[in-house]
Length: 84
Image 1 (cartoon, rainbow, N blue to C red):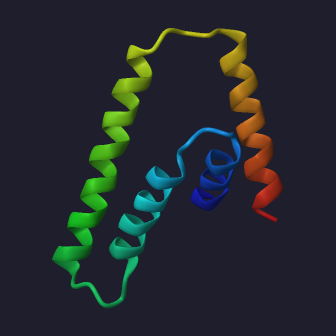
Image 2 (tube, rainbow, N blue to C red):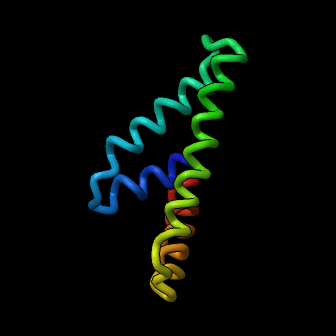
């Protein structure tokens, strides 16, 4: 599912490519069979910290009402579309 969201982020015209590539890299390191449990857990911890930081930033932004509902619907459609 994460790949679907990343695909959406890369296709939205915004310059999120570097951010998504870095997030992919952190995830790959967390999932690597070459990393021991401690190292892998530290990479996942980074992702969890980033998730909370991004949530904080989103909550600080103004609410765009129905437009946000449209975003959620578009994202869900794309997740379903690319998960097949």
